[in-house]
Length: 263
Length: 171
Image 1: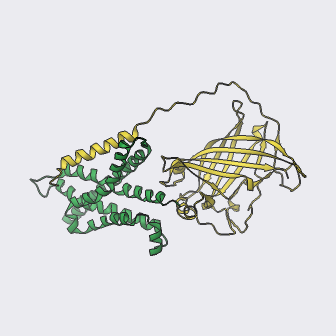
Image 2: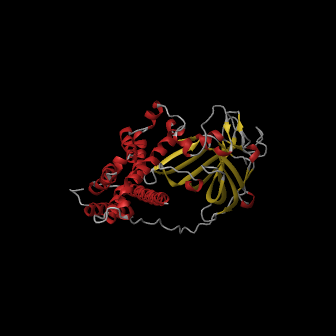
Image 3: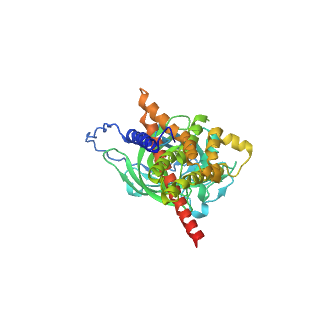
């Protein structure tokens, strides 16, 4: 290093690195959102929604309208830019116990979506169970979904005609407590998220989410029927499940939009 | 699929492995070079720099093999690599295992400066663009910090192994 002495090199590298850290660590002031001061107190309704045996034609039994529902995820692209988003193509509302965590040779729902109950006015009786099949994550880019996503999420590729509910391919949620929030009219949901990720065994994390109830409505027609919706949002930390990816940040937002009908 | 996505990821990977080396090199050279005593511990530290760099290159090779697993065909390699020339350049760091090259630490510095350049480029763009976005630099600096830790950690390991090896040899 005749042209550039060692000390000069060290100084230059330290200056450039320091400059980078100063820029990288400088945060713009953010204007905090205004506090909610409406003072409005919401009171819950009295609706009771139960799946029963999901008997077709029984209007007191509510069925998950899977084709019009969705489980969406989003995270900041490379942890810094806008959102990278996707959805899970296969999901359900069943409490999948260990014995049921197997492959199912079907293209429909492998298990009945009956592990839930929603009492508008009695949150102590409300509960939900749900699951997604990890390898059905769909970002709209087949090369990514069937490629790097599979290894990143520690699962196996989709097999046509098979619903894979095995341990490495399933993430489950189970509510532990649902509480009505009178200031917003929503429900605060305490839940456990159980996911294998890339760890040796499944990891369970306690999370808090928010549940919005979309009121029951009647759809007119030759054979009128009723619908209602539930929207659950929560956030998980991907490194809790040993997921290593430079494509999204650590925090991943999940939004479950579940629509039900009584057809 | 947008290839720029994977191109950027590959660049981040390369930065994570190699961009921290120039600073480590400069620090070790600054504290290590002792012209009076050719066989001093400090001079030994300097001579271990290329080996440490080669070790980092080996870890990088391991990551590439893991990514390609289980399909190591030329077709899959071509499909997976967005910047083959840059990856090949990164893999050239393995040459520092060769003793003849290992005796010239400055070559390892020159090799790694290519990856430090990406950091400089982003800093430059951030400084001189009117609608600059700090997030890219912020992300780069996170990767750079990881690279410093990786290179530092590998260097410490190499020094440790070298010490144990020479102790064993002297017995």
